[in-house]
Amino acid sequence: MTTYPEFDQVKRIGILGTGTIGASWTAYFLAHGYAVTAWDPGDNWQEKLTAFVDTAWPQLTELGLGPGATKAALTMVDTPEEAVATADFVQENGPERLPIKQELYARIDDALPATTVLASSTSGLIMSDMAEGVKSAPRFVVGHPFNPPHLIPLVEVVAGKDSDPAAVDWAMGFYRHAGKHSIRINKEVPGHLANRLQAALWREATWAVANDLASIEDINAAMAQGPGLRLALMGPHMIFNLTGGKGGFQHFFDHFTPGIANWWSDMQGDPELTDALRDKIWAGLKDETGARSLDDLEHERDLRLVELLKMLQATKSQIKQP
Image (cartoon, rainbow, N blue to C red; front, side, top):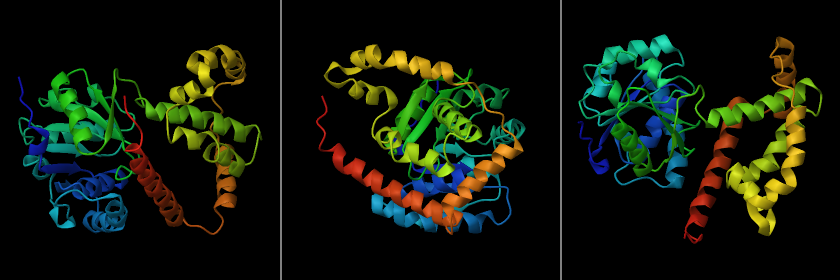
């Protein structure tokens, strides 16, 4: 039976893969006072990682750095074995390709310390497949964040068929200890939970484009200026609980679901994802974007996220918990 470290004993995080997600995780853990050892197989990854951390640092500073937080606690190494050898926890962020994950896991299997949990940032792959045949598989779990991880609190934790239940519990607790909001997904399905919810919404938004229901800009506004504002504060079931007024969810269910069932029956399955549909969405996005670059849009997104997170932090202490 493996005894996992106390959360406050975790001092060094191993980061495997420093693309968009891995770089964001790196910035997050550094900002929360951890030392980070990172590795990536790409060209010029060290410069790219340093630039990302430098860009994210003012945002993280505004949200509040952890004790001892410093960018100088980042070490960049030449092999994945080095990245995990001294790590108390490992966050893996390799490409979303099963053979690459399997090859990486086999490579680090003997180097991973005996009490260290590895969590994969995979957005849709199945841990049981990724860790097949790996000796350390009992300590492997999915720890899927939402982009950008240095700002978005959510992490989905999913066990594989060989995962030690205690390792899953430990990962849930460690993410909470590190300032994340971890949720447990009870079974393995492609895309986990949050991405499936997101994909269901995008399916209907894409159907709206294919059927000329509204412009791209108005479809985006229909969410961002309407239900998306509520969903940023509470999830769909809780929002509908409030929609029911004093009667709560029971009144909502009895009063509104007959109409919603009719809407569901009118949803005509998956729109065909053709090149023509891609080009139509892209043309609408260019119209809405105007002169703003992708960097400008990312800055706008992150600026708004920081302000939203600050508001949520400020109001949390004012809300009376039962």
